[in-house]
Length: 422
Ligand code: GLC
Image 1 (cartoon, rainbow, N blue to C red):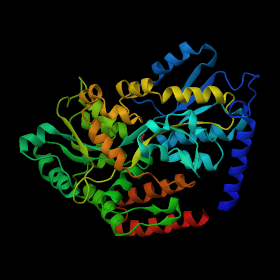
Image 2: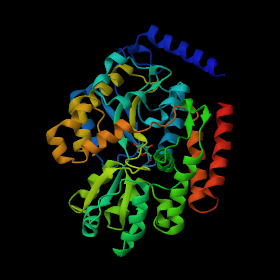
Image 3: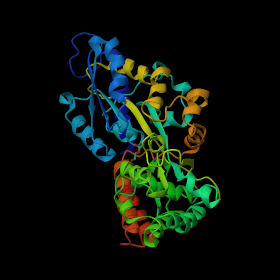
Image 4: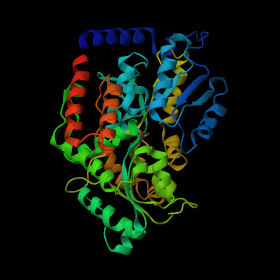
């Protein structure tokens, strides 16, 4: 099966190359050499910066205007809506997709997005791990646009009053969440624990930070074991013992950010945008927020590598404009705005060392280190199924419907089944 799919992809690559990148769109492009208006679909723009950023492009390119379609906040719903559009083939509306880094392999394996010529994009100036999230089967299928790594946000004021440093290990976090938080009328710790992609991320981080893995060999080999039991056990114990509040079982990024920003939590695992928002004027905890790497067993742990890549749909009518737009969005000027206006981590390495930006965003050096050591999600064409299983099983363990040991056994069984069907 595997080799048949690979051969199919090879033919597609060849066809695109023979047709010339500029004019191979399946929809008619009116002889404009692949240039013309486009629709860019993205997940929820939580910081609301993208529309105004695209106005700059639209002013400069009146005949190649970009229409922005904003899909729901939840990554799972965004993915579903993108796939519905992609399945419409020639009738699909979307030309450029801002896809989660976790979906590149699935979209490429399904031939929904086209291979891109490496030399048109500034890949050499990006942080190295992000480029890998955009490749599949040795081909570039998307261009990194935003990266992400989880950070542990904490209440600086409260830890300072107690004379304790920010936790470096899960044991320290657990101890402080149990003892310090209640003394200040706070809940201890939360992450994104609703069953959706965010829970997969949090569960994977707990497993990785306990020294384990979930899948090896691009999704073909199941590797869950005692570290998975420990990681899932940590999350389940938190809920059982009350230092993870029950409401957190319904949190995505935004609900968890609000809980922290309203001053209800001592510790929060979230992406850096939540640090920016919680530190901004008007936040109940402005000036009281610290950020450190996620804890691990004996020192800093491992984040899952987040972020999004820009891809061109197979049926895009104007692939040349799409490539130019992507080069523009990943250029230095826009990448700076992605951070300044969008509070999102840029993919360009030099920005992490820019003194002005580091002054404005003091977490940048911590974030850079976290991105460089972050673990990518498995490059499985069946990643969606893998993620659904992880979410369901870990949520059951966190609600107490199953024990961590039974959860890991079920995880191993179901993941092996997905790998077998490969
Ligand atoms: C963020 C990350 C993305 C991840 C998602 C999970 O948007 O950038 O990679 O899948 O959160 O909720």
